[in-house]
Amino acid sequence: MKLSIFFISIGIAIISYMTYNINKYMENSLELRELNSINKNCHLINIQTTMNYLIPFKENYLIGSEYKPFDLYEFHSYLNNKVYNDILYLIDVKTEKSVVIKVNDFPAGVPFHPHGLSLYKKSENKYILYVVNHAVDYNYIGRERIEKINVVYNPKDKDVKMYYDNCIILPNEYFLRVDSIAVINEDVFYFTTNTPFPPPRGSDDLSDLKNKILYYSSSLIKMCLTMLNIKQCKVYLYNNKNTFNKISVIAESESLLNKGISYDKKRNLLYVMRSMEKELNIYKINNEDMENTKLVKKIPILYVGNNIYYDDDKDLIYIGINGKMNEFDSLVYSHKKNKNFENLGIFSGYEIIDPQNDYSINELTIFKNEFKWVSSSIQVKDKNYMSSIFTKGINVCSNN
Image 1 (tube, rainbow, N blue to C red):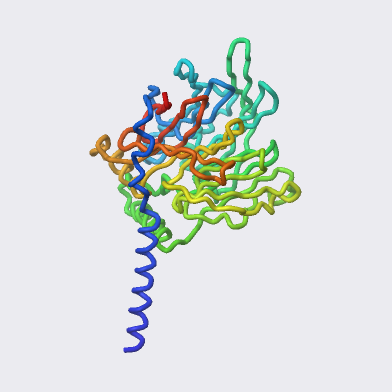
Image 2: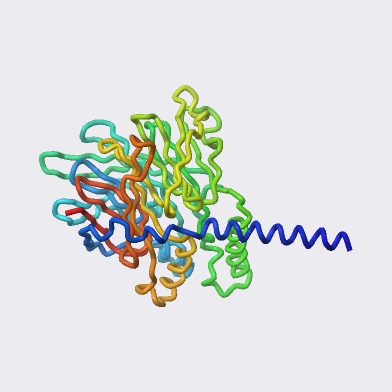
């Protein structure tokens, strides 16, 4: 009898703990949903694709990475040998026209599915673009690659050209898990990992029972990890100067879901978005011993944060934000089944954090059902540009 009471008590404690975590990670600040949005003049730049990441380039351009997660993870396309590569875009913010950027000399046969981007400036008109590439090949065997691409700007013709340099192939344990990247110099960068969709071989599009079991088991495991507050996503340092272990884990970087990462050169800080926890973590970089990068501050944000961008000129942090985390699952289901997608009331927008004012909220703009699941947000002059992996095009907002 006593043993039964003990196990019942343990069961109640576990269920209570899981319920607490569900409420904690699935809630959001809906009472703030209209803040600032009524003062915004917004419109859509028409681009016939979805994008995960935007970064500013020079004064009047954006570089955007096309990202079609449903094409990447739909297994039937692989069965038919139809692996579609994604592309990079250059967007002129003056004309609001976009063009596809060809990456010259990109290695033949290597799939290109860009995720995170980071731009490193070598000189006034020469840069290196670092691209997280989920490279899945025709044999269903993928590698996680960091592509290094030289970017050359011709100010006379206002022309941008890209030339392939080389790549860093990460170990298999990181496949489909690397999310965002922040480059410090040509030898050093930090990157975050997340919990991905089940890999293609676990897709429920297959009739094979074994693969269906793998797919649903993976989804169930991720749900249990969340409810039990088991953190499996981390922040990593890649240092090419290290002789043996080039990749190391940053202390105190565990999270249920790490997403955006950005580098504040002025303060030598690293900003990392813990999405499920709705928290911006700030790390101090030790130049003498980068593996000793330390967590120094935690900043709560109001919504589920996605990618982040620190603007050196404005000295502000831009975060693409969304509502409840479980709204993502609703969007995935509606998108895949083509059911009620346009009418889903999803909260998305951006949040701007001010480092000069103790990392307080400088601005918050939230929309309902207008631009679903903002993946990144950046500011160019007086306008904010947002990308999405569900809505095609780029949403532009200004105070004018």
